Amino acid sequence: MPRLLALAVLASVLAASAGASDLWESLFDGRDDSAASGLNAFIAKVRSEAPKPGPRPHDDRYWVTVRVDGGPARTRAAAMGLSIEMVEGGTVSGVADSGTLTRLLQAGLVIESRRPLTGFSAKDFPPADGIYHNYGEIVSELNGLAQAAEGFGAGFSIGTSVQGRAIPGIRLGYPAKDGKPKPAAAFLGTHHAREHLSTEVPLLLARWLVEHAREPRVKKLLETRDVYILPVINPDGVEYDIATGSYKWQRKNMRDNGDGTTGVDLNRNYDFRFGGGGSSDYPGSDTYHGKSAFSEPESRAVRDFVEGLPALKMMVSFHTFSELVMYPWGGADEPISDGRALAAYKAMAGKVSQWNGYRAMQSSELYVATGDTCDWAWASKGVFCLTFELTPKSQWDGGFYPGAGAVAGTFQKNLEPALYLIDLADDPYRAGNAAASAGGAAAAGSSGR
Ligand SMILES: [Zn+2]
Image (cartoon, rainbow, N blue to C red; front, side):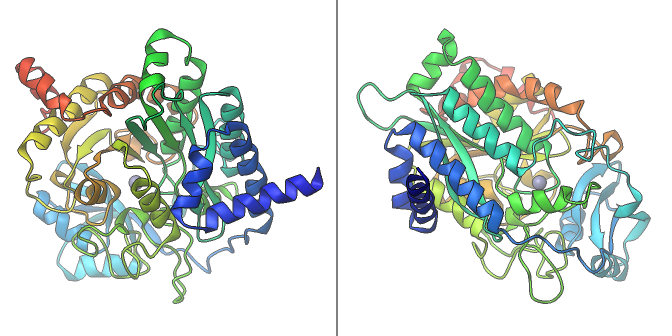
């Protein structure tokens, strides 16, 4: 047995370090149990070998509120390195380090308030947010679900993080009767470490699908679609954020930038319009885009996953917070050029907002931000991609750390949207057709525009 285990570990390590095609062989070979146990062994290995994130010498970041009105002004503030998290009545709030703060002041912007991040007390993980999953718990939950989904589910990894942690996922879907690839939908969580609720929602979606897989509606979905759930793209950042029992407000990955700063903003590291507005050249910024597009193993893993899966038509990238559902472009003010796709995007975002109450909008309406997942997925691969900014609406309702009480309700609100988007995966353009025949119904959800 130990010899078999060692082989499983080796196979998994090879699968993760080899090109995408090897990875996909292990993913699609239908040996669900072996895939799950292989992942388990792999995780056990990489966990024991992963370097422990050291404490930073100091953290000079602040939660700041800046007087900035209008989209273009917000875009300028974002370009100076401010990570905008909240827009409220002529101001924006977000996280800035002291260098960014200096640039904002030099540009003549009025800083209405600032407070060190350490001045906030987290509502949990330590010890009361036990309901949230740390990395080890995410992996065991996925393994447990893969086992429970015998015959229609498999665990897998799309690659490894900077510190060597596997980026785990689960595929759910009954084998196609004709053996052909089925249309696929993917749900990605936690590009940004401190956005823990964006792990919990896709993880609960996986659990819900497994537990309801034999009900007619869900069974039909899983017979005709494949669902890929990747609840944590940035595992190192998550572990760093919760390592000490009080939250670190970590957003980026754990890349050592070599200049005393840590981390690249993974949601600025994709290569469509890389390095443009809303991303920072300055490594200390929370929105630092990295040395080059796809410089980070985590964003490369997502790229390889999408490129290895031509059947993927629909993707959701979960973030927190603000309660928004957003479609491309994020990196430009103009709308996407394909009018039929734009109508479909507007219709599906509008429909989603009728269920979850979130505001539907083009991403850049908030502020321009380049290099994000959905712009790349749409521009480079033609994958329909929505960014959800989950609960809460505001920093003053808990912001990134809304507590254990936010989990169940946020999932419930987003279950119907997820099922609807999975269903659309065969032809997302259908959303626009439905809107055209339903008259003004879809427009109602787009009141934010
Ligand atoms: Zn985010």
